[in-house]
Image (cartoon, rainbow, N blue to C red):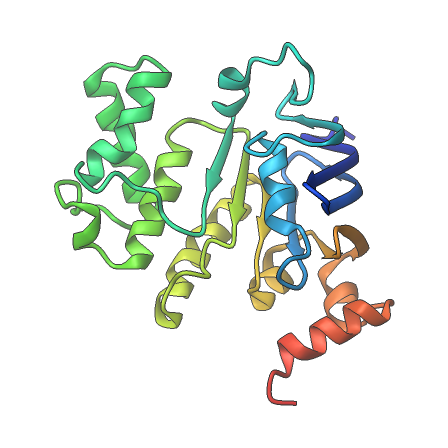
Length: 248
C-alpha cells in the first residue's frame, strides 16, 4: 500500500483556554475520500485548516502531499501549491472575470504564461460545467456556479490533495446538488479528498471512510455504511439521529 498522503499524529489546537482539537491521529491514503462529520463546534474546520497550516497546531505533527507541514523549515508556498482548498464561502475576486479568477494563481504562483493559464482555466471551467461564463464577474453567477469556479481554481493548480470545508453550507438547497456532482466526479477520477460536510447522502455515496468528530476528538470512524447506519457510540448515534430525523 502506498504511503498516506495525509498523516496526522497527536494534533492539538488551542485558542486561549479553549482546546478545540484534543489529540487527533488520522491518515488519508492516496485516492481516498474521507468525510469528516460532527456537530458544530466539534473542531472539523480547525482540523482541515491545520492540514495546510491556515491554523498552526499547538502540538503534534501534520504531513500532507509529501511535506512535513509542522517542520520549522517547511516551504509552505511549495506545500500549498499541492493542496487545493475550497471554503464555505467562495473567496473569489469580485473585480476579476471568472477566467482571471482561475488563471491568476497559475500565473503568479506557478509562473505560467497568460495563454497557458487561460487554456488551463478554460479546461477546468468546462470540467466543472461553467463554460461560457468566462467573462462574467462572480456576482453575476449563482452561488453554485461560484463554488464550482472556486473548485476549478483549486484544480487548475494541479493539487495532489483537495480539502473541502463545508463547500455546500452557504448554498441554497437547490444549488447543492450541482456542487456535489462535481465533487463526485473528482472522487471517481481518483482525487484524494478530505471533506468536512453535513451532507450525509454525499458521505454515504462517495466517501471511502467517514470520521465522526465530537468535542475535538475522533469518536468513531469506518466505512459509511457502518458509521452512518450502525454507529457504535452513543454520541454518534445521537448526532446522526438529529441530523437524519430532524423532526423526530
